[in-house]
Image 1: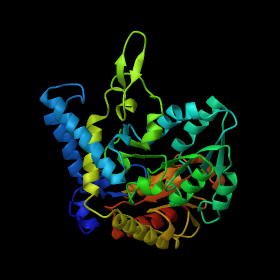
Image 2 (image 1 turned 135 degrees about the vertical axis):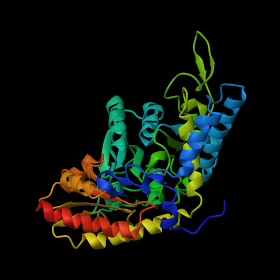
Image 3 (image 1 turned 180 degrees about the vertical axis):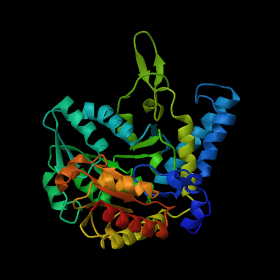
Length: 411
């Protein structure tokens, strides 16, 4: 596909939800992309077309509809493989999302590879989905979960990370991008440090893959996970990528149809990859929608999207810095992804979000599924504005002006 020059103005034309007025007759300024992105008509059309014209269960029928759905389903897998530069098609596992992907690894790999006294190293800025499954694994096995800290700038403290890597570290799991701080972690360096002590590595790329080029071979991580709904795709679909040799050594997580080779009254034999980890009827239309989302993003250079979002974050940080009592979290604009989290002294983040919503501006308020990080920052919650390829500089200015008005009202 020939890649087009990136233009947010042109991109916006593909997103029906942005071309409307929401409640109170305000134009929608959607700045909650870190939670979920909106969908272009190309994705909506692909899913609608499948439901209307070609839907059937996959890999189970020999009639035309089943064969057509199966072909589209596998085409989506190939699209994911190419998008993340995976060496093998069968290393791409469809799940229901990042959370499901991490839980799959925690059970299928973790249960057979960890024991009492082994260590799991995370960072303090992890999403709950990359904390709780490892805490559950530790409770099952007697392993210990440790956390690497951040420095005063909100970047990962590499000295602390190194000091907490030991010969007992069996797994290192971290986000490529913090969903609160916007911190971009040095993935390849962390992977190498972990491998040096013999640990396996899982990278949570949910906030990275939609915005920047993701190359699993360059990273050399053992597992990479991400979700469709954060990259203009549908909810209910996610990806687990793993190195083939590691996946082949893992037992199935769920039992049922598709993941077997043969079943008798005495037992069963497990199927090959990727079917081994796709028990039951998979998210067929959602996978096809993710394939369409990837084809949509393939129009552009991912580095161009990242650079554009960084410019929006820089603009937002400059505007927000002029609001008295506002504190932003995370590194400098040129060292972060396209999001800004903040608090305003004496003002509730929830109240800010409610009043911004009345002005047509959608942001996120809360702990963003990162309570340990908020505890570390000594705050209960924060506001987050997160940008994507369809947001514009004018929207950033409108957001900053609306926030200024909200703060005056609340003080």
